[in-house]
Image (cartoon, rainbow, N blue to C red; front, side, top):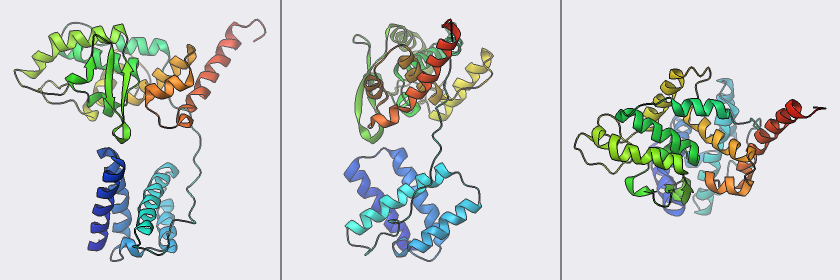
Length: 296
């Protein structure tokens, strides 16, 4: 890799962090996408790239059967990189200007039925510390629609059990307050009072959810947790943590929630992102109509 490319990537990531306050996961994604392009370019610096270079790279990715969604994400990073380079006078022309992102199919988010969610939430039964923790995490995830990174990133001070709300640090370091509901609050209090002290083994931690070794819960560990609990109750399709977020939004709309409210609860900056759930809810209404209407 050209050493100038490495310096340009470092400077870019520092700049967008300062200007936009992006989350570490987003910055890592930008850095990874730029590093892949820089590796492919070899001795040629990123700042010297032409439109033809980028088109050749995208063709290379296409030949390797890379998904359109992945390519679109990378191209978005490149457009941001070269747009800032042009703004700062380091290039005379934006090489991404005439390159269109691949068209992506509008796929409906996977969700779970209310019966499947109830079965999953009931899986961690008993008063063992791990059961108390798992039940609290699943209840909060379904009650609030948090992203898994937001869930595992919660601290003790993030939750106000008296008010029944959780303070969440979302994408772009944007904070929002999300209600939990009585069932989730009760599960959380049982975990904090009875389960968490046993998992910490005398250690001190700011993290709300901890592992059996007293360390902060990770996204990977929670992914394993939710699949293990799903197998425990015999769910045929093993859900990811994000599927519970989708279920949260879909079930709210099915029960009459306003789309703007769901947008605020999910932490979506643009309501267009939330509107995908209206398609899921509409399909559910069609099924109900067909099942219960005398001429359905």
